Each structure stands twice: as C-alpha cells, then as structure tokens.
Image (cartoon, rainbow, N blue to C red; front, side, top):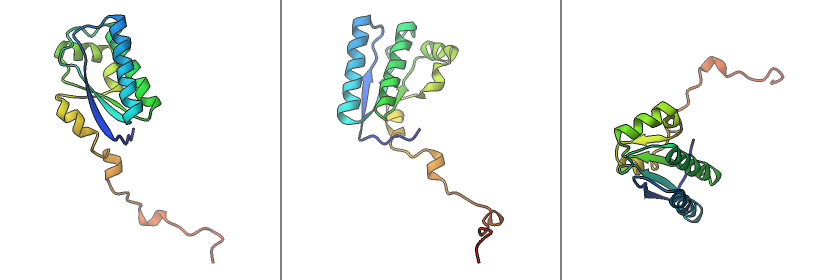
Amino acid sequence: MTVQVSTVVVKQLHESLSRKQGRIFLSDVVSSISNDRAGIVLDCSRVRLMDRPAIYLLLCCLEEAIKHDSDVKLAAIPAEARAILKLTGVDRLFECFDTNAEAIISFRRLPAELNSEVHVPFGSLRAPANAA
C-alpha cells in the first residue's frame, strides 16, 4: 500500500487497556488520522499481554487508518506479544519494526516497487496492426 502522510504520530500502547480506555485510545488515534492526515506508529514496548481486546484494538486502528487513506505500523513489540501476533496471523497485516525511529522513517521511504525502474523488453513493443 502506498500512503502519503503529512505527519507521523507515535501513540504509546499501555500494558493493558480496559474497554473504556480502548475506546478512548481509538478515538485519539482517529482524531490524529483525520485531523492531521497522520501516519500512526503504535509503540508496543509496554505491552506484556497481547490478548483478544488488544488485538481487536490494533485491528480497529488499522481499519480507521485505511478509511482515511493512512497506515498504522507497530514498533518495539516485546517477544511474547510478537509471538501472539504471529500465532494469530495479525503480524501479516502490519509492518513491524524494532524501534519507533525505524517505523517513523518507513513512512518517508517509497516502497521498492515505486522506487525501481520499469524495464520493458524491446521485442514486446509493437506497432498496432493498422499503423502505416
């Protein structure tokens, strides 16, 4: 996915979130995305338990980002939480980085497929059959 963002915002995920805290967190993320057209980096360094509510929150954040033509990237995920994301397959939906800085920088890079030249074999270019 190619995303052009004007700013990048880092949001710290808490060790655990109640349902109410999760709604407040999501509202804050949505506000950042819609007001600033920001890319979001979720700092997961404090997360100890990647349970169902935490995964649901990550997916809700991603859904809102997609609605606003933005993106969410995960950073600093502890090994236990990363294992749960891998086990559930959720890790395939997010770009994951070791540090917040790496995640922030990734918003500034062009994807490899946009950064490379397109090569067309010479023989594949032909004039239309009705050309003079």
